Image 1 (tube, each protein chain N blue to C red):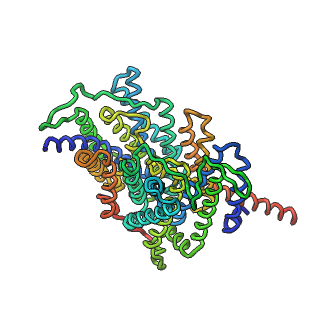
Image 2: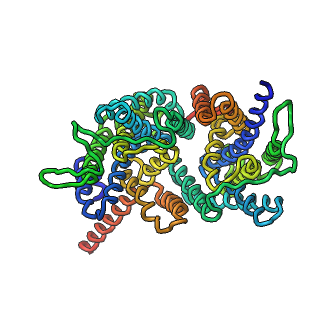
Image 3: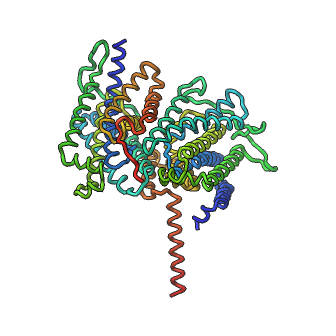
Length: 340
Length: 291
């Protein structure tokens, strides 16, 4: 049953939107909103990364590099050069997409662990550049970024706004923006997956040679999906920069790349809603584990390990299997009762 | 001029020899199981930190070293038995995440037990440094080279002269065939993880007097080992050694002649360049994908 809901594009997106609308009922303070905004932004990034990893089967251990680049492009364009936010986001997406296209050409010929290594190297190089070009980026200390500005309308987490006569706080307004972006990102990804491009991507994951033999231009599709996932990361990086108001090179770090790929794998590779769940779990886990104080890090590692050992397919696909097993069993019982 | 070059060469070769040992550990596990073990760096950390902690408690150096190496090897064994073996059917990426989980776990425990401070360790010999053609050679470098060379010779003997070594080789060539001739591949995997952890911990101990050690040095040293193994070609022992030394020397030269801020960037550009022209590293086996 759960499976059917997830398979239908429209219903899936509507369910996501409903959850996003009703979740704030659980929020008690602005901190909860901030957490939710952060989760939504990262989740949208991961939805893009999943296209590359989950559908096309190409591993990236450097995706935070593109997130960081996007964040700094927006930060520098709006902060240092006074551009409006939206053109900065678009220009950043184009620039990062171009970078991804240029490095993607040679890298994507590599296979397996060599591809992981190369993407890791690209991520590292980006992080090192951001850290050392102090004149432009402020170096390891980071730089501040002005609030998001849409048509002369400033969206600051500290502001107060009125919407249809309702007074809302800055974080609430930001939550709406982040929620809408997550829905759009999901909708777009689902459409790609169901399109001929999506079918070509899935054939790559099955067997690249077989895909090539039946006429799929593997090089073209691999670099296309690499660029798309980098653009996702760039835009969300830019949004994140405006939301936080302050960015450091950590956004492009190897650690963050690992966080992103972990969300994909733990949520369920190839399941768009699964990776969103993965983002929620990985972002919220440290909050839950804070009670363990000193042992927080060890607990995080332990949970990560155990989840992957016992649910190698990821959270949502495993949940799906369990639910469908139970419903099938129930159905069988009902049939048994009626005949017996 | 020359003495400056020599200086960078010494520094680079020393750290490079450490990378080579770590890379050999990656190679061993990769050959036996096709897993890239992202927890490899934690064995390096365990080696250095345990030695520092035990000598700090007044234990003689040699006893501390032996105990540290044993601890790391047991951890390697545990990692294989408890984390890798149960996840038989898992994807490559899933296995990567499992080893990352393991490394975070080990690091988390180390941080609780030993704290977050940096620790230093005295050189193995009383003599601090020698002068060679105007360049300073840290006496510890000689220990690194010496122990590294001994380990490499021991590994060669292990793989060519002992049954266990040959069993590992056979398993890496063809797991099914190895099992058919009676090799217990599960034991081979355990052995590979143990030897790999052993190599890592030795690297961590010999390099500790030069670089300091702390609970989190495993991340970067492990990564460098992975880079070295990939430069050399995953699965190639010679490749791991050449890759490690090359990486160390290029880093030192880059730090000396270009900029120390960008030394890691040079290392990572080097791996990209190598992979662009040789997609399977310098000594990687040519594999044709069977369809």
